[in-house]
View 1 (cartoon, rainbow, N blue to C red):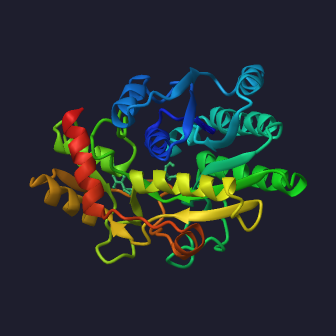
View 2: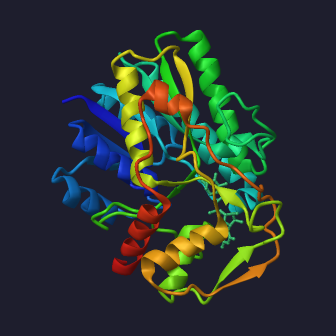
View 3: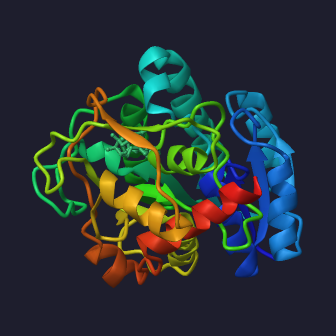
Amino acid sequence: MSKILVTGGLGFIGSHTVVELQDKGYGVVIIDDLSNSSVKVLDGITSITGKQPEFEQLDLKNKQKVEAFFLAHQDIIGVIHFAASKAVGESVEKPLLYYENNINTLVYVLQELQKLKSPNFIFSSSCTVYGQADKMPISEDAPTKKAESPYGNTKKIGEDIIADVCKVNPEMNAIALRYFNPIGAHETAKIGELPIGVPQNLVPFITQTGAGIREQLSVFGDDYPTADGTCIRDYIHVVDLAKAHVVALQRLIEGKNKSNNEVFNIGTGKGSSVLEVIQAFEQVSNSKLNYKITARREGDITSAYADTHKANNELGWKAESTLDDAMRSAWKWQQQL
Ligand code: WQD
């Protein structure tokens, strides 16, 4: 059975992608350093698919350990690379932690990937590389802008590193997926988002407020130039996002890629404001959310939602779930936590 390496495979998006890979019949080996995930996620994945993925707790910052791992797993036919630190605010406070953990690890994985007979690589990128794009919806040829945070910069640098490697190594096949805002959880509520500490992202903060874990949601500003004054984002169900990774990997394995380095925006193509997300939560939970309007958050952009034509037409992938579906799954997950 062809084996896929999923780094960061016990994380939020990684775990949902492992489930979709196994459902498509791929063998999976996970590397995770458990710095922002729990080994219990492995049980969640296994209880959904009935197959326990291989798992190695390994710090990808350790070059020797990465070499040894690949030596022992020469049967890998593709790598989906999620492993990275992803908290925007933390990256501003600790830039070197982010450059070491997000860049060094990418370099070590790419160095070993080159030695495999089928170096297929899917990179977890982010719409954050566009900064505040001038035009909505955002297409892949929109200019990338100076990142608002070291976290965003590591995604931009990561894409540049991959481009440089693909230029000199025609054997290497890469696809970067630029995510918009992943939310929700698997319908079984056996895996989902496990924010450590106070959630930075909107939806887990909403569901924790709904569950009484947080007192009140702060809406960071309602004086933006949008219909209701709050920021607009493209909230995509994490299972739709996971499926995009499997489709992208299959594209490379089947040699259907048009160049050896491609980029796709992965979103729903629909923008939703913060207040609309709150309304969706109140709808699906049949409750009133306790929130107040506060000052803007430093670094937030006004609006970002995807032009999904390239992913729809070339990748043959389209998001199927609505905002309500995603919020329903997020709430169901929160209630069982
Ligand atoms: C969404 C909207 C906030 C919390 C970030 C990263 C991106 C990706 C997803 C990693 C914004 C508002 C939020 C709160 C609020 N991360 N908000 N109160 O900032 O769009 O994207 O997370 O891959 O790369 O940049 O997501 O969920 O933090 O914020 O009002 O308590 O919700 O102002 O408008 P964001 P978010």
